Image (cartoon, rainbow, N blue to C red; front, side, top):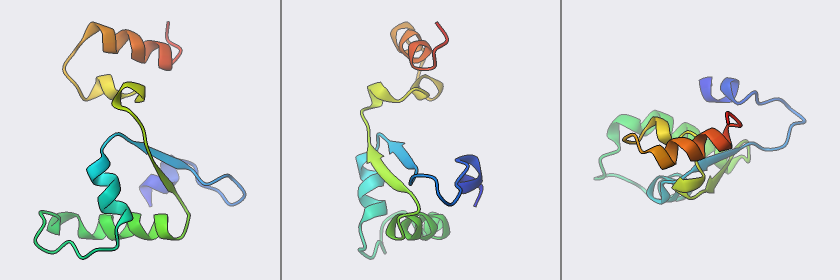
Length: 93
């Protein structure tokens, strides 16, 4: 629910896209396979919730290159080139 509030999901708006640079996470979310045995036990509730949102076309997952992720510099080691690119994405420079 917090996710839907954060992306300001309202009826009548286009289906929001969640950009993700982790193909494994996208494959896991889009597959209907039983994931028993994988290290996913602690994320079952959130996982099934996201899968239901995707299945019901409430949200859409899109694979995006890490280089195109504007917030990537927040999760990686500091690299000047990445910081400058992120500033351009965010219109900070």
